[in-house]
Image (cartoon, rainbow, N blue to C red; front, side, top):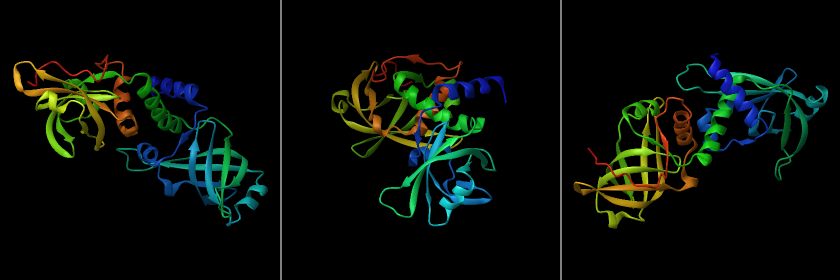
Length: 282
């Protein structure tokens, strides 16, 4: 492991060790968690479970208790191992590891008599791979708020870093796709240039398609045009600032941008992401 990665993992652990992450559908997707491969190991036996939340200090999992799990926990003095399994992009084999823990509480899950929520306290610091996977998401989430207006101009170099093949994309206005050119991206919005008349597009709701490669991910992010200007020298073109609906921004998109914004070589600057571009489309 390189020095820079080791430093990053240490920073993740120190900054986020007591922050809980809920495994929503979005979270499962961006981490690559293979939910069918997650188990509680108690003694020599395995019990399927669902990870509800996790931090670097512990986790909450949901498991069926009608299979003798509670009795087994009594025999092991509540000591277990939580098996995680992640699919890493570009890797053939899944990443699997165990985290030693102790069950510190157990209670029925909702109104179910068959399923309990177990609160686990990790016995040791979890593996570096786990800290890197979870920490990367937490870091992106924090920075999406702290640096929401940090814009990444889509230069050739930044397109390469973001793994975006082309600035040509589509924007959906009232459900109708229109061709456009991306000029920059931020956590809170984007800038585009397209054919149109500024006064007819201002305040319109829209959704921009952002197409990433390696791994291939396509996000369609909803928002509203809050700034529209004519492009100097090109009467048929309009420059638009799209402000995203914060709740509609996918975590995968945040991670992509954060990886570039936290790179020491990234070419970006702070600014208002809703400010429309004033350069030409050429």
